[in-house]
Each structure stands twice: as structure tokens, then as C-alpha cells.
Image 1 (spheres, rainbow, N blue to C red):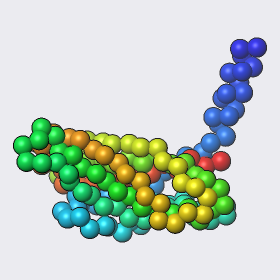
Image 2: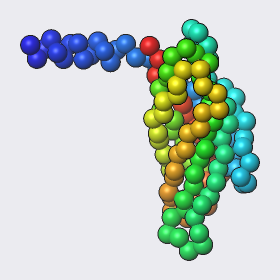
Image 3: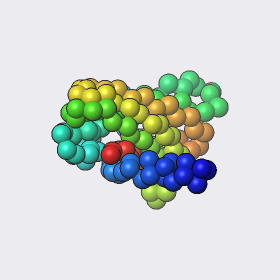
Image 4: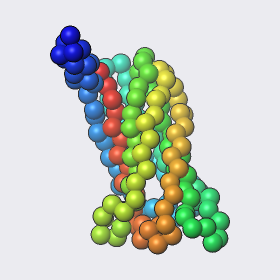
Length: 142
């Protein structure tokens, strides 16, 4: 009985497929949105994509950590809800990963301008080393 339940669990997990997309860009210096391209899954029935990113640093002078809020905007043109995992990595000048924040997000069917917020806390020295941002989106599709 336990073996059968385990086999069913594996079959259920095997049904999901991940479609990974990524983009790299310099750390934004102001509060303006950056248009992103290539962070999309073009499947049967439409496209799911992350279209823009905005960085807002909300920490105060003297804080022990830099508090950054990443706001991503996306859309889902498919007739069903979609799940994705968003990872934002800070990269050094040598393009080494020095910090990361991850969030699983759900986007409803046929939604435009869906907003995701990811909050990041890093040491000021780490923040000062950050030169680029690597955004990876793993679309979970069936």
C-alpha cells in the first residue's frame, strides 16, 4: 500500500514541467521600471511572462542591513492559472552570485499587470559589491 502511494506521488510530480528563463542587467540606480524581455513561457493557449522590474531601497542610514524591494510585473494570457518560482540574484563585478531572494508566485488566468514583490535584506558590504542582477523565472507547466 505504501509503495503504491509513493508511485502515485512520483507520477503526480513527474507531470509538472519547468521552463526556465533568465535575464541579466545592471543594478538599477533609481526607482524606474526596467522593461524585461525573454522571461516568458509561450505555451498552448498563450504566453506567461514577467515584463518589468523595479527596485526600491527602503533602508535607512545606519541600518545593519540594506532592505530592498523588487517589484516585478507580469501577465498571463493563457486560460488557466500558472505557477512560477522567481529568483533574484545579486552579482559581483566578476558575475559571482553574492545574494539571492526567491518567491513562488501564482498568476491567475487571463491577467494583465500582475505584481509580485520580493523583499531582500543584505549586509551593506554585500550591497556595495553588487553590480548586476540575474533574474531567473522557472515556469511550472503541465
